[in-house]
Length: 193
Length: 150
Image (tube, rainbow over all chains, first blue to last red; front, side, top):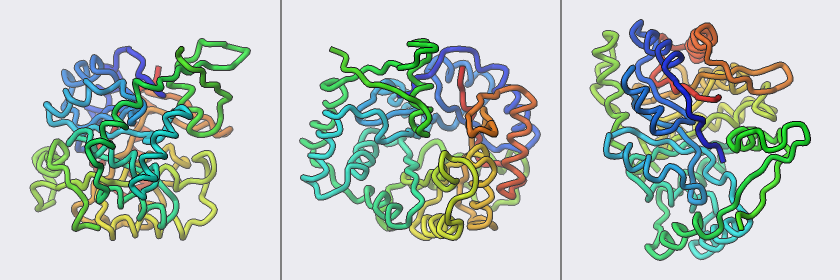
């Protein structure tokens, strides 16, 4: 999964803040960032939303999400099914089957339950899938199912490495995930233990 | 579905209010309640998020259906396609409903080989904002996310 790379965002964000002053932009958000980068950004301009990779299996942003909720800032996760290990997928599939729902619906419903500042943006090019995704709003997640799903991140954690002879292990996990999402990278997943 | 879509009355509620004070918007609304289930437009472009979709009419139909079902938050970028996704959004939904919030992002551009090239240079960001304005048919973008790469 993508993980933010630390580094100053002052220069680019200042450019966008100028465009906001000029009236070309109403509000600014940040994508693929760390809590420290949010702090830096907030010294420059108001930040209304954060968009990062996060889902039931990849919980790096747990504390960040809670902090954003306290600040009244929206959190918009992408890759709702991204980077699941086979065991994590099985757990999700089982939960979905027990609720007569699709894995995507359960993944989305879990995110809706996770925190009230989470906004979802599932994508699809089909009207049927669109309706299916939106039905996630109606899906009741029983407490025990929520708890079971809540545990899969820690339980079956995997680690990613890049299988590239040219720059073995030098690329960051986020690059790999970004490329994988668009089917352009050769990657391998290995268990943590 | 609009009856059941949970709504977020949080940060983004401030959008229209701030818009109004910032740039003297003519919008009469003072706030917008975003439904928590929005729509991500990345898949509307062709394979590899590059070029036109196989079926443009279907892409237009999905967007119109999303809005009809109560979605009022669309996530996009001018680097989807590039340009194509925003142009389809404009074709499908312009003039936009008052409560629709289009969130776009900048910080990358596309190579001719379909690659994603991080670009947070001053010139690149300014060009991207203008590309979004033009292709979405807007005078001001509701929300712009700065996408951070190394």
